[in-house]
Amino acid sequence: MVKTYNKMQKAFPGGETPAEVVVKADNVRSAKVQEAIGQLGWRALATHVMHEPILTDINKAGTVAVVSIPVAGSGTDATSNKAVNALRDDLLPTTLGLVPQVEDYGVTGETASSKDFNEQMGGAIPYVFGFVITFAFLLLLITFRSIVIPIKAIILNLLSVGAAYGVLVLVFQHGIGKGLLDFTYTQGVAGFIPVFLFVILFGLSMDYHVFILSRVRESYDEGRSTEEAIAHGVKVTAGVVTSAAIVMVFVFAVFGTLKILFLKQFGVGLAAAILIDATIIRAVLLPATMKLLGDWNWYLPKWLEWLPRIEHEKTTEAPPVLAP
Image (cartoon, rainbow, N blue to C red; front, top):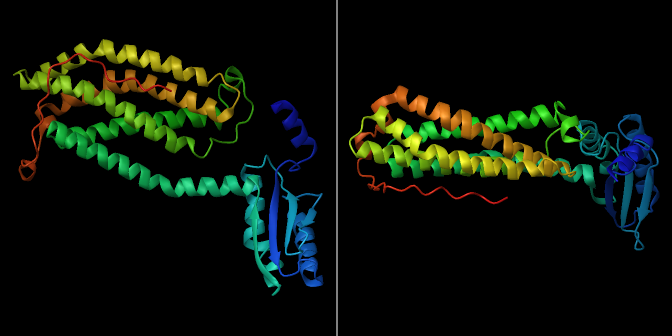
């Protein structure tokens, strides 16, 4: 099905994903409105990012017209977005926008919807990131009564997320390994994937971070030095963290074998991030940074001494594994 669709797109550019210009007026069949629609058509062709056939459909009441203008590109790539921008920012205001009888107009269709969705997601990202990071910081601050541990945890978790984003860009934008993963489209990552991955990966990373640090803090409270507590905490949690990570890597890797591209991106991103997080981040960077910081790991400013104390009970239970 996908191969047939790609062949149709190549033979008839934009034919399957036209931009839909919706025009509302008391009478869209009037001479002035029809003249404006005609100007819109030939000016659209002059941009070379829109093509024929340009079709106009009018409702029975004659109050709404839908002008279908095929756009160049895949329908969701930069070329198609350029066509939508040209319609919204230039062509419509200087044609239909100059006709007094036209009450309203706009651009819809797959390309416009995808573009608007991506822009809305992009606008929401700072708020999502800010909320998650702030909540994680406060949680770790109260749990471990340290201002250093939450800062370091957030930095390490962001490294895991950043690594996942890098893998997605290399694979799905630059096409590295696309033959192995059996796909051809390499023009970007689905707009919702970055936020989706961030929320899941940050939660998983924080889960294992708290699990390991709880054992370290528990050992430190028992009287061991910071260095000894780190070694003990990592040792007693290594098997659990590694086992859980292996399970999740294989589970999420299954999504990478699917034909639907956004599921493939989801699976590859999660599998790569968890693998990196469980090896480089948790096994190397976490104990290394804690050892370098020494007793500074447990630093808490005096003005925060009012924070409640949470006892870290000795346990060997594994953190919950998130089911896909």
